[in-house]
Image (cartoon, rainbow, N blue to C red; front, side):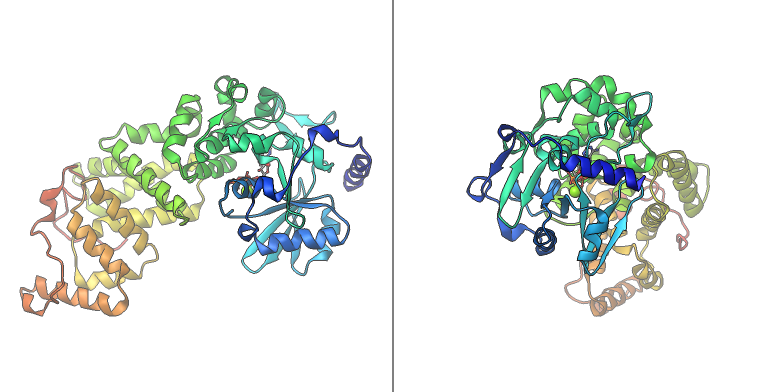
Length: 467
Ligand code: ATP
Ligand code: MG
């Protein structure tokens, strides 16, 4: 197989030259990329490869971001060197991938993913009955590499050494117009890889732009092909969609394109729950804000929040059957995770974190000084406090009490001790011991509840147990 790949690679090196008129080259004065936004390590990889006589460019999302003036979050490099040629040029580099090998060049925390130009599979390509590509394992020329990329705005090559951008598909113009246009025949390319439909929606939402009409046209009728996508890949894509910085627009567009039922059927169920719409809306708004501020979003927090109304409603049902708080919540969490989340292929570590966030919620109800320290030591304590803010914003938890917990999460250890001592004093009826700046707490926070959540309306008479 390797022999074959090398043979194809060599034959493609001598393939017909690129027609000059199709290839646009933009100078720095035209594309205006600020070189300070480019990773030094990505520049280094390109420099080293070029010094050895290879072509090497920064590609993909990084170029898209750079042309728009944003700082990319990661950098990919494409080159005509093969993985075996790339690896020995760097001190820390490893070849990864079985189907299509590429090289991870490692610089401390940063990994520059370096791949060899790839050709779209032809003739001998393997597709399933719906046209989905199962094997595209062939090295190619730069022009071929551009043609097998999905959208014109994703097929740009930036040479950080001479600072030019090479564009085979008019991608710079589309990018400036925020237009997501498929390279080649849209229907064929969506069939080859149905995830491209979700990518189209994501890029259009992220750029506040539109999907070009010819690209958009076949999506509705092909939406059902999403079911052929492996669960783990679908999950990765959903996560990217929800963290594209414009999640609300992305979900609206998914719905408009008919992709919604195959991608996030769960969200519909959540929206149908009492208070579901408000909770989802607020979760996504806050996620968008974090993404736009360049902060990270944890998948477990996001999914814990998106699914909370479903968990909460089931919890309430269990409580109505006179079950105790913790087993009632545990059963509700199991039900949601078993019936719904597992279909999404969320990794186990995420579901464990989601449980921790959910299970901390009843423990915020009653502030029991002896237990508070232990709570603060749990790894998800801060995330659970953040989650509590969401619940407070949706009026299902007292906002003053929620703020007390947030202050505690933010406080350094000495101040935490002070806050807990002040609370103990308050609960023992010796308010004089409390520090002056202490926040006033409502006498019965549950009275403020509007949602009637079990965690706020039907609180247990016994303190909840540690999860
Ligand atoms: P982001 O990193 O924000 O997800 P990206 O465009 O960099 O955006 P990647 O998944 O990192 O997306 O892929 C890098 C590049 O590889 C893309 O820009 C595109 O050129 C190409 N690519 C990725 N997925 C596909 C696909 N399904 N079909 C064709 N080309 C793809
Ligand atoms: Mg990328």
